Image (cartoon, rainbow, N blue to C red; front, side, top):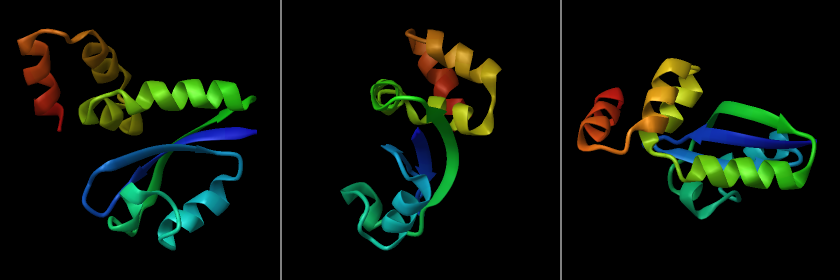
Length: 103
């Protein structure tokens, strides 16, 4: 079983990753042995995760979420599907303004 996860860092940034042992990976992040992004932004806390049957599925999901804006990641973490759907459609200046308001 693989997991895609989002960590909230001490500077309020998000880190998106994948792991086959989520608890071990979270421990490594908080020990400073995780990723470059999290080393100087500890402590980190797990705010979202999703299980995947295969590594390929987890990689695909991780790449998709990494390409999202912070507002979109925040909507996912908060379980705000309505905002997530709206942000998924925003390609215009007014849509980007809406996204900034969500932060």
